[in-house]
Amino acid sequence: MIKGIDKILCINCGLCEDICPTDVFRRKNRKIYIAYQDDCCNCMDCFFVCPTEAITLAAGVPRKFDVRLRWKQIKEGLYPASVGIRGKMEGKN
Image (cartoon, rainbow, N blue to C red; front, top):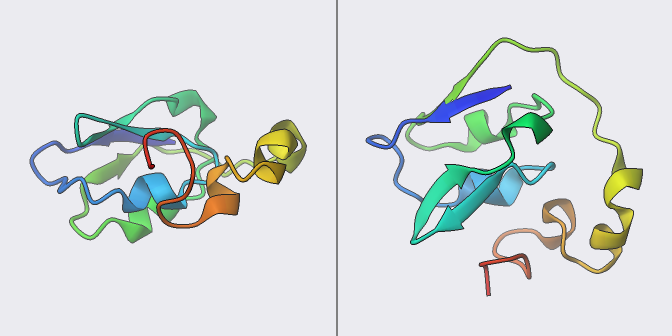
């Protein structure tokens, strides 16, 4: 599970926000923050995509992402897995 973002190391590139399949991250005033920590599925994609290693993780077992819970958002192109980089999601227009 994601533990935190180092505010000194983070360059607010948004790669973690773009790659997260469970929509854990948000951006406010050009700053990335963890909005839904409990939704983290422990895939570690954010950790591996971060160019500055600003993301820290807590020990955890990966959870399978259940697409059925987000199907409506995915069909409408509003979910990260369906939009790709800088899609139609909140705050990305």
